[in-house]
Image (cartoon, rainbow, N blue to C red):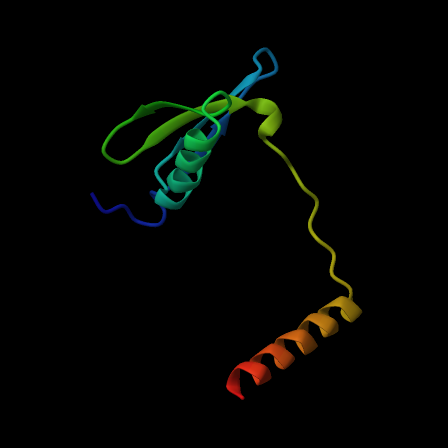
Length: 93
């Protein structure tokens, strides 16, 4: 079944009274990432349900993280730009 981009949702649910978070997704990219985590860390990540378009996983809620946006200075941006120019030039030679 083909889902629109809007329908490819992911929902993370947890509360203060439990140590486990639940993640429901209809996004195939998220499913691939979580399936890899389930395969590599079966004691931590669990596949708890699935149907033809979605999967549900559980894992410790401490694994849900929030990060501040990365601040890139003008100097860092210029160094990265120069590195990309150098790499592209080397590839074309």
